[in-house]
Image (cartoon, rainbow over all chains, first blue to last red):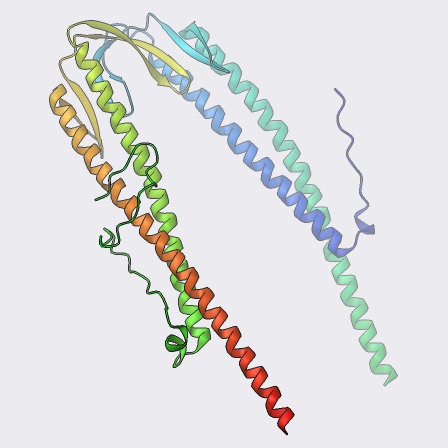
Length: 160
Length: 195
């Protein structure tokens, strides 16, 4: 699929009000993308924790444990994993896997999320550069406006 | 105290003679606005009524949050009681359990003729109970939560009444103020005409 065409805007041709609007829009986009990164990192941490938990299950068959029935009720029991785990692969589907397979699944997910994070980070960097350009143009316009004001006031004084 | 049905806990009439558990003050209905405002500045009266309205609104949101939290807690405790009953019924047999090892990952465990159950009480404390003791603890907690829920619903009804009364008071004072201003305008006009 081809990349969407980036709309080129000549910042110099925009008024201060328009620049302010563009700036707010870019800031909102940066905020949105930053939130996306946070969500992706949260998902990544979830898979890393799952991988570690599966690793902790190796060679524990028959050991005593407290089985969580809810977050506040536990029963004494024994681990009976047979080196197998049930993994939620999304949309209500669960697959029984060996611990190694489960860890590989988690690794693939983490890798996929990391790639997405990198893409979003690149987009954020681009947006930040755009924002800097907008701020610079706005500042130059403001200073130009101030100069014009000063010149006008000088002319008025001279005329008097 | 009014009983709460499972169908809709809000469908209870507030009993006026009951003092609210959280001692929320009652707003007085301004029956005679002229008498009430005569030696006061209308702007100040507005300010006071607006303040009262904001306070009641704050109470309302606080109580609503409290009610949803307590409702959830009550459901959780009922689930826990059901689980205790279920486990007690299976206390003479061995059974296998799927438990959540991590988010989205489940593993299996074997439970052999359970004779006791462990309850997490919070603050890093877990205690072992017999089924009967566990049931008693959970039931006691549920009764407390249900009582608090009942009181909160009662309070919410009271607060909603106060909000309505405050709203009516604001409207009455506002209307009175407009009428007074009109009278002043009219009297000013008639004086000019006489001149």
